Figure 1: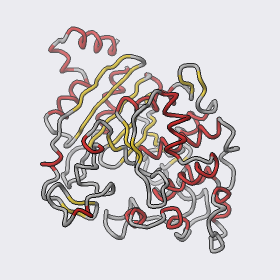
Figure 2: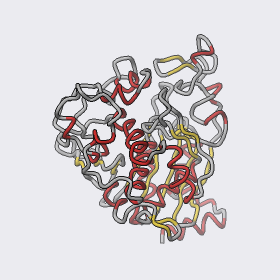
Figure 3: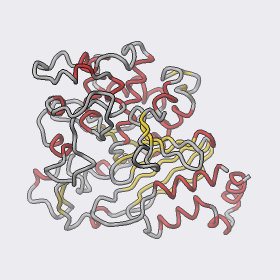
Length: 373
């Protein structure tokens, strides 16, 4: 009934619309409460509940800013500092060169993991129990820790490879392993050379280097780089015609954070998962893959009862007994799927300039659950 009321109010243009949870969130975003939010899209089935783009002048917003992750529109020491991994310059972030493609940051991980599901469906990867290092025969692994040889593809997908990594426990500076990765000449060799600090499958650590390894997993298994493979076997079937995928120095697509999509195209990935990997009658993912990939494979609740669960590069932000599947990216990127209510939401933002503002994840989840109730 609440959703029906919302749709009626949208159609009628009623002032009472401002009282609905989603409309109230839109107004807070428009007022700047949540900082630099760029777009909010909410769909239920084929119906659009919200589709709002919020104008932001990133040339002005970035002006004068210079940090270890980049320099703003007038703060770069020279032209060499303006490059695709400068996270503060408006040429590359958050919109790709001023167009309609928005950086997804780590939501890229969820899409890259989806390509592994596509390869499973196409018979190019047997299953997730295969040894991880079987995809890296072309690399010198003589010095690899014996424990890494016991890691599986599933361990990689669930961020339990055992590779020591300091990302979420370090500031965004030279001590952060992911910033070190992005300054390295070969991301895959850099990651494989890191020490181990746990037996595979026993310790969850957020590890973007592990996600970068998915680029070689896909290339080795399919014979094609992830961007080309996605273009043929994921994007084309879903009608996604426009995208940008940043490349690492070795030519691998950046599968830890380099994909740019328009909000409606990202929502199609959510719809694919909502429909168990079937798109317009065609199976793209193996039956049951979506449920496994978005499952609470890793329960991060022993020392933090409110911590989310984690699956195959997907988060679980369940609330009030309602499942919430999510891709989550730096700066405020979210793809949310609420299967119980068949709701999909995409929010893009770029809160990277040091401002302290309330996040959108909790308020958006609450608004989606209220809307679906």
